[in-house]
Every structure is written in C-alpha cells, then in structure tokens.
Amino acid sequence: MKLWLFGLYGIVGSTAVVGERAIKKGLSDTTGLVSELPIFERLKDYAPLDFQFGGHDIREIDKNLFQIVEEHWELNQHFDYRILLKLKEDLEKIKAKKGTALNCGEGVLEELKPLSTLEDEGLTLKEIVERLEKDLLEFADNETVAINVASTEPTPEFDPEYHATLEGFERAIEEDRRDKVTASMLYAYVSLKNGIPFANFTPSVSSSIPALKELAERVGVPHAGNDGKTGETLVKTTLAPMFAYRNLKVLGWMGYNILGDLDGKVLAHEQNKRSKIVSKDKVVGKILGYYPYTITEINYFPSLQDNKTAFDFIHFQGFLGTKMKFYFIWDAIDAIVAAPLVLDIARFLLLAKKKGQKGVVKELAFFFKSPMDTDEYNTHRQFEILKKWFEALVSS
Ligand SMILES: NC(=O)c1ccc[n+]([C@@H]2O[C@H](COP(=O)([O-])OP(=O)(O)OC[C@H]3O[C@@H](n4cnc5c(N)ncnc54)[C@H](O)[C@@H]3O)[C@@H](O)[C@H]2O)c1
Image 1 (tube, protein in one colour):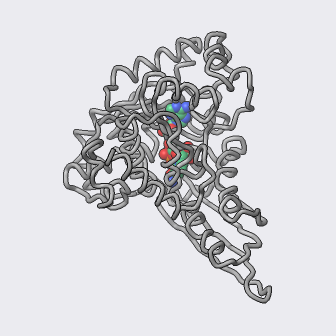
Image 2 (cartoon, protein in one colour):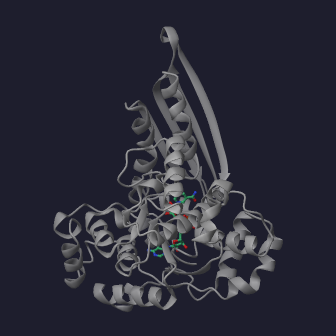
Image 3 (cartoon, protein in one colour):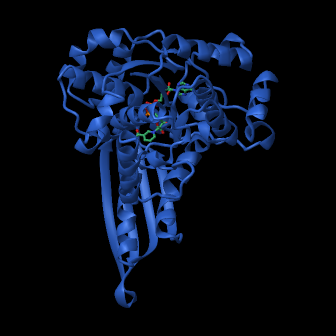
C-alpha cells in the first residue's frame, strides 16, 4: 500500500518510514504496532505491512529523507544508527513536495523558517489546491491512504458560511478566501475529494469541519482523527477508568508536560498550543462523567529534544471521605510511541475503504486523543470497539 504524509519531514512522519523499512529489511521487529497483534492477523490480507511513501512538507524540501532523518538523529539518537545506515539508499529516494502553510500560526512561521510554501509562489487558493492534488495523484493508486502529521495549527474561528457545507468550503476556494482555510483543511480536502482515506494525527481541525465530513460521505471515503493518543493522554485515559470502576472520586488532575524539538518549539507559541491543551485536558471529565479540577500544561524544554516527559498528580477521595494521592511520570521518546500508530491507522483505514466504509470511522477512536463523533474516551472500551469492528469487517 501507499502512504502520503503531510509533514513527511517531521520526526513522527520520518520515523514511521524508518520503522516500516527496518521491519521489512528484518532490522527490527514489530513491537509497538497494534496492527501486528495476533488478533488483527487477517489485516495483512487487506493492508499488508508493506508501504511506499511520499508526502508534503514546507521546509528543507531540497533535501531527501535520509538527510532529514540524519538531522533528527543527530539531535535525538532515537534508534540504533546502524539501522539508518542500512536504509540510506532507500531513504535517499524519498523526497517531499512543497506544501502550504496557510494559517499555520506564528509557531510554524517563526520556528520552521526558512519555509518553502506554495503560497510563496504567488498562487491563488485554487491553484494551491490544484498543485497539492497533482502531487498526490501522481503518487496515489487505489490502495493509498493520506495522514496529516504536520505541525499543530491554531484553531480557526468556525465560520458557518464557509465551514458548514461543502458548497461553502468550495466557494471559499473559488473566492480565494485564504483567511477561511487552513493547510490541514486543504490536505483533508484534496485527499477525500479523490477518494483517498485520510487521517488527522494532529489536533488541527482538518477533516473535522462539517464541510469536509460532508465531502467524505458524498465521495464514500473513510476518515479518522484527531490527534494521536500516544503518551500522557494514553496513560490518563487508561487510568481514569480505574477511579470510575472503584467509585473513587477524582478531585483534581494535574498534567505537566515538557518537551523540546521542533514540535516543542511550535507548541511554545500560545496560538499553536491551545488546541493541544484542549485535546489533552477534556479526556478525564469525559471518562468520569464529571469534571474535576484540572491543570494541563505544555512547556518547551529545549535540551530534552524529542524526549517528552509528563508529570501527573491526581488527588482523589475514597471511603470515609479520606483524600489520597497518585503520581506518575511518563518519560518517552515521542516519535517512537507515535510513529507505529501512523502505520496502524493507515492499515485500518485501507481495510475500511476496502469494506466500503465511508465518513468518520468512530471505531478508530482508540488511536486518538480527540476522537471524532464519539464520546468514548476510555482506552479499554475503545480497544474492545476496535476489535469488534475489525472482526465484523473481516468476516463480512
Ligand atoms: N507523540 C507524538 O509525537 C504526537 C502525538 C500526537 C500528535 N502529534 C502531532 O503530530 C505532529 C507532528 O509531530 P512531530 O513531533 O513530528 O513534529 P515535527 O515538528 O518534528 O514535524 C512536523 C513537520 O511538519 C512540517 N510542517 C509544518 N507545517 C506544515 C504544513 N502546513 N504542511 C506540511 N508540512 C508542515 C514541518 O516542517 C515538520 O517537518 C504535530 O502536530 C504533533 O502535535 C505528535
């Protein structure tokens, strides 16, 4: 199958490519891939773990993917360098195309410069869409999935005139209303319009606006999102049900996250950070059915690079009104927990397409912090839902 990554040169996107290639060449095993669990064995009949990659980015597009991964490696040493050397020839063949940074916020404009974007060429919105579409279609075949792993954008104000219906969204493009669309919306638009299943691994709005949901339904293509559930939120949504099952009352939950690297730099900007905080913050209340006091913070900590650390403190009340405390520290390499999910999501979405599913695939909520069109945030239940959905599809 083929996978197009918007944000290919980021650490998540590039690590997904390295991981898939390393497994294919027998340099690594499949640990970390949900789709390789024995219960999902039949997935290989529909979407084998065998990918070709392409994508868009907005920086360093004169370089190839090997050079980019080397740069990430210099800063992070996130896997055994011998793996990278053995993949050199393969990775050198992969090059990103120029994408768009429309309404991506100060974080992206300042921290990622110098940028190479389509809007710098003086193109209209319609021409930008045509270029994105051309790149994607030159690459795509019937078994292609596209995933957004680009930097987090600020959340745009919802404008019913342009975001509520497909007609309105396409009018925004025709009228060159650059103030109304963001890069992540355009990426979802070009993918879905062309029948390519799409996932949004970021908290950006992307395919979650009604206009694009309508497009997916009309074209008959599946999509999923938002924001990969990889670290602190995965632990939170796995642990919070324990308090609910034992009838313990959570009084407050503080999560303090620090990270470095490009993602951390972009998230250091308030506008870009907001959607991420909302995404991480609301899960506890959704699971408990009430909203305890919460503090959710994300701060840039340069020397950590991609080694994201989260400190969580939970204050809870038990029998006889007694107050108690629980603390945990999550200390992980962000790209290593995120990259396998990108491959998993792609494979499950291709299965969905082959089985004729269209619109939001709610059953993929297990992979996301802010799953679309469902209120199920409990990781345990989400996993059961995923399994049931899978079993039903492969036996249909
Ligand atoms: N565990 C995780 O790492 C994790 C979990 C959930 C979500 N995410 C999200 O995934 C995304 C990628 O994370 P990362 O750590 O790889 O970040 P990164 O900064 O390393 O990579 C982002 C890449 O996207 C590119 N980019 C930025 N704006 C773009 C645009 N408009 N079009 C095309 N490319 C663009 C950047 O140049 C960069 O190469 C972020 O939005 C992050 O919040 C990451």
